[in-house]
Structure formats: C-alpha cells, structure tokens
Length: 213
Image (tube, rainbow, N blue to C red; front, side):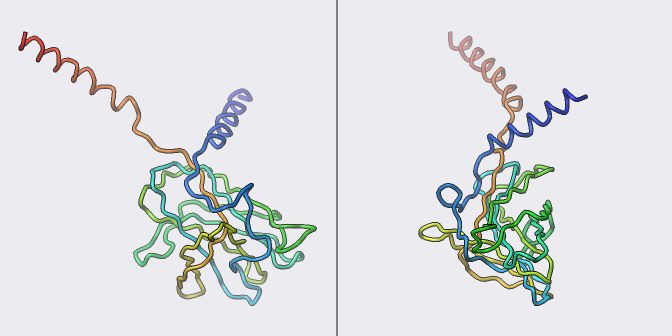
C-alpha cells in the first residue's frame, strides 16, 4: 500500500512538473507588483468578489493556478478562496468548476517583513478546459478584512476584463490584471484511436497495386 501511495505521489508531482503554461502574466522570475492590487475584499463589510478571465487556445487538463493575493493589514484574518468557473449566459462568472481555499499563507501588501508571496492552487480533479472557451478565476475573502490581488508588472501591462460582484450584480471594466498563471497538460487524440486507420489504408494501397499490375 505504501509503495502504491509513493508511486501515486511521484506521478502526481511529475504531471505538474511537466505541465504546459496555458496563461501567464508574471514577469521575469515570477515578478509582480508588491505594492498595488485589485480589491478582493473590503473591510467595509460589503459582499465582494473579484474575477479575472482567460481564454485558452488549446484543450488542456488543469494542473494548477498560481496567483498572488495580499492582506492590507497584517492583523486581519488571513484567508482567501479561489474559484475556477465557467461563463454564464450574461458573460459573467458562472458555475463553479473547482474551489481552492487558503489559510494563513498571504503576505502583507507593501511589507518588507512579510511580503506578498506567490500561492499555488493545485487541482484535485484536473478538469478538461476547452480551447476558445472563456473561464473565470474569482478571488474572495471575509467581508471584514481588506484583501487585494497583486497586479502584474509586464511592460506594457497585461490589461484585461475584471468582473466584480457586489450584491446583487456583476459589473465589468478593463484593468491591469492581477498576476496569475494557469498550468495544464495538453489534451491530444490517443494513438490507439488513430492506429486502426493505418491497416485499412495499407490494404487499400495493396489492392490498388494488384489491380494495376
């Protein structure tokens, strides 16, 4: 049993190590803005959610999502939830595909002592996401703390659509996007599906050769 568990962990790690980059707006050496970000949660008590979208150009199986969110105040509750979702009929974040929760891992915006850090959401279900389909990554936290999604520092900045929910509706606007990266394994047609084609093709060519001989 232990051998099987070790093998499973090895295969899991190898899968993520060899994952392809589907989307990435981190800078060199995973750099991002340490001092500014998009508001994810507001200590005013408002029910707030902040979402950023991406549209893959290939079919892939999700491996992980890397991102950076930070507390405004070090003493606040250190918790953030990330949700991967599809797009609803209005073009806003829709049904949840997978949810990731983090506790005690965020740094503090602009802090030297406890700086913001990259967090990794490792997929447990590895859903297949389709080329040309828009997906949303939504960050949210407790309504009594302030949390921000650190922005990217690419030059020029990576700009995209932010959807923000404040009960009871979503609003959208173009922004310098928060830093995030999506990793996955490309989905290809299994060779077993293609293999039966070749014998038929070979037989056809032999028949034509005999006919013309």
